[in-house]
Length: 210
Image (cartoon, rainbow, N blue to C red; front, side, top):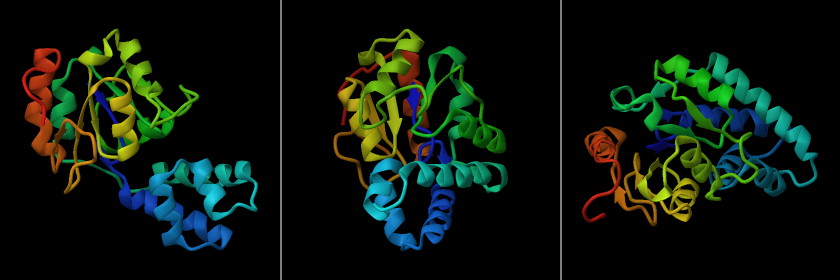
């Protein structure tokens, strides 16, 4: 079982919006536009779009400082069902695959009381992030699992694309409409919990997807 973090297990939408709004204020650009771009692109691409005249390294350092402060002081919540789901999975059977950094993930999990798995594949662990399949393939390798036996649980198009390109089963959660390409769609994580646990018990996909 391979899980995305933000938007899948932890509700960080408001936190991300506040971080980007503060960042945008420092650079004198429109916060709403920055957030719209940031939702679709990685930080380097966001900087190139919204502040092309600024040093991207300085932009990234400012963003990281704001994100670290948010982990220390922000209010976070786990999606309904996350604690039950992760607590029911054997420790060596699941991993987190995130575009964020491990220290922030651990901080957020500590704030929400979620269990932390043995394996976290973060932005520092791979040279290519989502939508590249590399993060999910790295997680499967570290778990000793074949890609075709893995279930990816995601909320975002880039993560869904990454899981599909890795040759894995991909289920989407926490959205009113299905992300293109998902094998199954659930409007909430809570709705998906029984089926995710059933997938784990089977040890892989079984029956028709859709």
